[in-house]
Length: 326
Image (cartoon, rainbow, N blue to C red; front, side, top):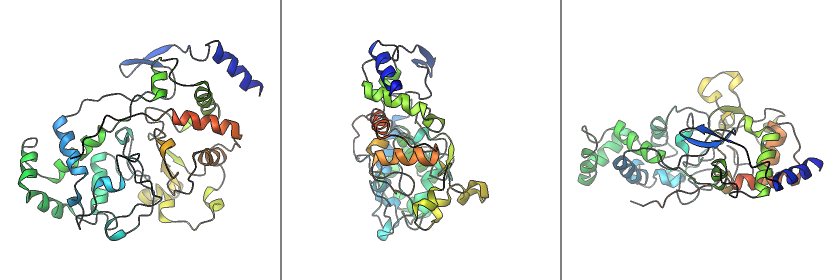
């Protein structure tokens, strides 16, 4: 309680918000473990437009029913809001679909990091029998039979419609999906009034508890691997039978030490999620914070602190320019 009162007094006199700005990524920002998202990055607008069309094109699936947007709906947090996504024929996946927003800032893709880039990631759902259930020859045949699509590709790529060019266009579009200008980013850039006292206190607690050891950088995560249950056996306490998805990085490497090791998720849009963690085992933000405190930090976080941290996480939510549907 004394610490809380002291923080309140420091905030009132402006000492907690007078952190000097330093040069980072070409602009001035507060010297913090979290960096602001850029409001704009240089991308080929033609590829962004074509990638948008392909992202919403159901012909990427075997039965012409599933597009990238089916599981990563741009109008609902860049995901589908379901504990498990459904693919062709209603097949149910084995892991929660992460948001596509800000995915260009992740150091690898998928929960287990099996794709090193967005371009590589795109082939996963297309070839997965319970997602799109298709193949590159099928996709290429469909798109090459469409004169408008052939024309669109020929204006950008000399070799027209190819697997590589499809990957490139979709990945370029996905890199444009940045939720910039969040209240917290505005605070990082020097706006003293951008966040409330509660939100600032939540951020200070977020740092004090050690959350920034895994959640830092532009994406507040997405730049390292971490064990689910670093302190305490999360999976044993969860009670459900272990699934292949629970194995995490081990699915890729086969190394025993990689069991339950996952790409640390971004918290940029965590406050908008309906389900949390790879297994979608929790549906409330506050409960997710408590579980992280217990199994990642070995700490019981009081409800008052949980509320403040939740307020901080809500301040991370930025916006995206109005998307034009193809």
